Image (cartoon, rainbow, N blue to C red; front, side, top):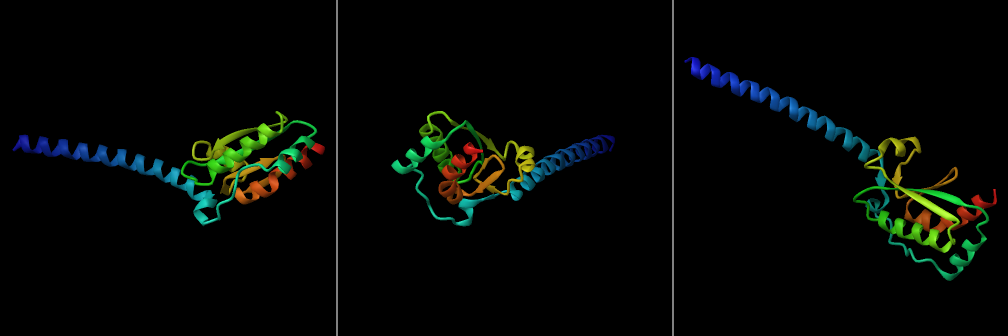
Length: 152
């Protein structure tokens, strides 16, 4: 009888420890889920595919950049538009002759930074105090925003 009680006690302790560990895991996953639910991937919204190649005219426009400009690109793992935005921003930096540089921040790994900047969508680019949300805005407005920012 004592042997059975000891076995039951052991199972009870094991079950309690398992529930505590599972609860900690669930809470950690809940925090991750909360972070992901705060940021919407624009490609998940069904936004159309946009070309990310720079045109000759856009490359010529980038020669008008007067002073160094630093860009912050916010992306997230699993976002379909984020690699396209990365490629486009990288092309812009290369075509600027070194006057434009960028840093890429993955919101899934750096949520506090994304929250500080008020990031709601990925991809998002920040140039100065201007925020370009989504690949379409990045593609259509980034070069003009850079040129405008470099004049101030």
